[in-house]
Amino acid sequence: MKRGEWNVYEVKWGNDFVCFVISEYICIYYYMKFLITELQLSKAVFRYLNNLNFIQIETSSNIFFINSEDDEHAQIRYHKKNGWCHINLNLIEHISALFSLDVITSKNIIGNWVGNTLQMEINYAQWVVFSKSEILKVHI
Image (cartoon, rainbow, N blue to C red; front, top):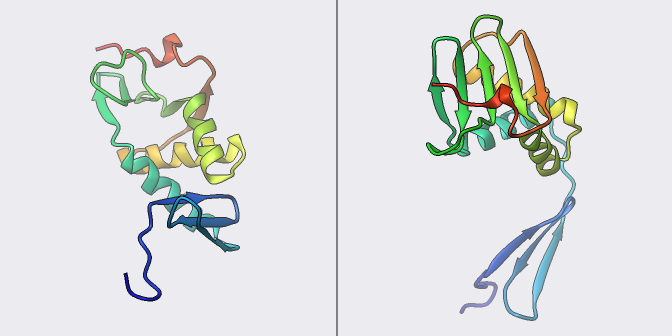
């Protein structure tokens, strides 16, 4: 290994730092402060949601976003007739924790992502508390 080069075994992120683990005993911390705009934050959340690779199942009245073909309950349901978007609260809380957002902001960004992904207008975005709710049940 040349001077100034390290093999990085793991990268750990915190709210205001990143740590590069280079051996069992050595970790290099970089402290940082980021100021990002609301648009940049939305783009980051959109990119993250895109990378979740949801499977879309379309019926005559709904579009469901599911994690896998075997799922009986969706993470997101878009109702075509009224433009309502129902979002699993677990997904909202996951986005909130990951991006340090409150749940209202996360819900709104996810709703905007659904509208952008489907190229349809979202009239109302609402969270669904129970992940096994009938509202999120995939009806084919």
